[in-house]
Figure 1 (cartoon, protein in one colour):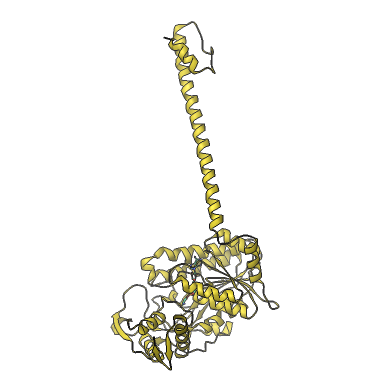
Figure 2: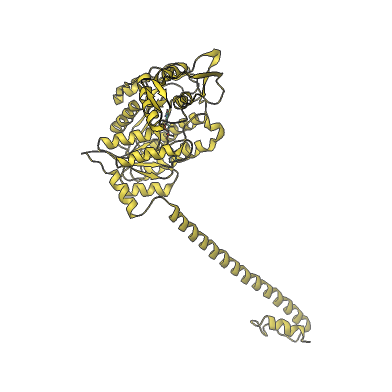
Amino acid sequence: MRPLVAEEEDLFPSTPGKFKTDHHHLHRHHRHLRRCFASTSTTFLWALFLIALTASYLSFQSLVSSGNRLLAASWGGIQWEKQVRVSALPRRPAGLSVLVTGAAGFVGAHVSLALKKRGDGVVGLDNFNPYYDPSLKRSRASLLRAQKVFVVDGDVNDARLLAKLFDVVAFTHVMHLAAQAGVRYAIENPHSYVHSNVAGLVGLLEACKSANPQPAFVWASSSSVYGLNDKSPFSEEDRTDRPASLYAATKKAGEEITHAYNHIYGLSVTGLRFFTVYGPWGRPDMAYFSFTRNILQGKPVTIYRGKNRADLARDFTYIDDIVKGCLASLDTAGKSTGSGGKKRGPAQYRVFNLGNTSPVTVPEMVSILERLLGVKAKRREVEMPGNGDVPFTHANISSARRELGYKPTTDLRTGLKRFVKWYSSYYGYKYNQGKSVH
Ligand SMILES: NC(=O)c1ccc[n+]([C@@H]2O[C@H](COP(=O)([O-])OP(=O)(O)OC[C@H]3O[C@@H](n4cnc5c(N)ncnc54)[C@H](O)[C@@H]3O)[C@@H](O)[C@H]2O)c1
């Protein structure tokens, strides 16, 4: 049997004789030290090995995920950049170059088409989320494509995408319409409101403030910021600190967030408080839309009633009037004063109501639909649940009239008639002189 010392020395050949001595005690001590040293260096080597293994695993993973990202990304590349550039190019002298977020949405699609029609350059951005039927969003995007408006499939929270877009195009204006809309859905999915209306807004403002030149920023707030306000009609000076829903709270937060960016970075900001927008290519989650569907399918329509059985009323505003208000806001927006994130002077900050100034009760809206569709609705009246709706809205639009020349011209009957015509052709309902036949 080989002596233990030899065994130990064989095991640690890198330190032969270093601690060798004739003295027995010292020898034991040195042996102990060597064992310690040896085990420390083995641990050290193992640690090094593990670190190297982890590092190579992580770099492999990041290679795979960036590869996946590149494969999955629906944006980027020379061809994509060319499409963005061409779409952003104005076709009239002194035309605008506008980034429209939420371009596959109801208002965004109409605004994009109107801008393109008058010769401005437009690039759309939308994440096509499934809050309501994404195929309707895709159809709107096809409509835009046919008019040579390129819609980027992406999220306003994607900082890399936004940086790339501003790198490729010197947008003169941003029309920010992307948002999580709807009041009641916040009970089900509160975080989607924070994601799009707060985080997404900040992400977009960050990109705008860093852009050189900075664009002017026009965006959709909402009449819902008036919340529990009961002074009628609602004017921009009224209280907006009592939101009745999370949606309203995020829109109110947006007004304050945009104010901070205006103050710190010199971004020109215009906030538009839309009042119940309706019309062709509208949103299926809104009452006039779902009521039309239910009436045609013979299903009941649920009509909410407020306190003391009072009818709810809305200042329904036709899409074409809203579009005119949006375009006038872009045209009258002052230039941002900052560049590359630095403010060079005070910039414009405006807030406007865009409504119709003539509220209509919900039962009256149903009666108009009945007459247009030639079908009697099965009305189911229930007390309004406390889930974020307010009893009435009514806009004072004197400020928008003065500053923007905003003058709504479409009454609810005329607007709903156009909506019903679009609805019937889009969903394939035949109706003739007010008589609907499916
Ligand atoms: N329609 C109305 O009655 C009304 C009233 C007041 C305010 N508004 C506001 O006007 C704007 C437009 O409303 P709309 O009726 O056209 O709604 P919409 O839902 O039809 O359009 C919004 C679009 O934004 C997109 N979007 C949402 N989150 C996004 C994100 N994180 N990144 C990229 N895209 C995203 C959606 O896919 C959708 O296509 C919204 O800001 C809304 O809050 C609308």
